[in-house]
Length: 154
Image 1: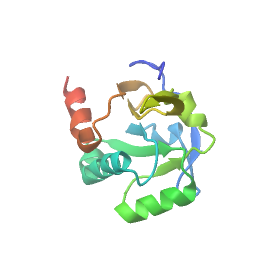
Image 2 (image 1 turned 90 degrees about the vertical axis):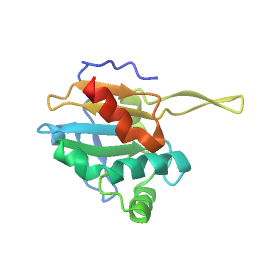
Image 3 (image 1 turned 45 degrees about the vertical axis):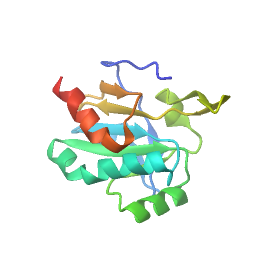
Image 4 (image 1 turned 180 degrees about the horizontal axis):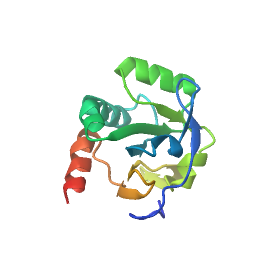
């Protein structure tokens, strides 16, 4: 469960995307960033969320936002996921879970009464100054764009 709050400075990070390129928080200083953490490539909820952000990607760019996904999947898995669904934004392969843990998106989960550690689907909207503008811990995967837009209006 994230300990970050709205107004906090977003943790710096450096990760590697699906092409092996380095991506850091500093790369987004001139724009706002939708940094979303998701459990696994090619699963129903994660696919819905990625495709919703993909379908609204140009609108996000027009509003000055960049989109980056993060999961513990490998570079190869991300390449297949992006290719299959034509995703226009980078996905960071955080296999060691360093970024995931820095943002508090790793923790206890329950499924069918079984408790285990896993990725907690979470989205952070980060402003141009690197501060957390919004946090979503109850992500509506099929309507995530509208969920974010509604919160930004308020």
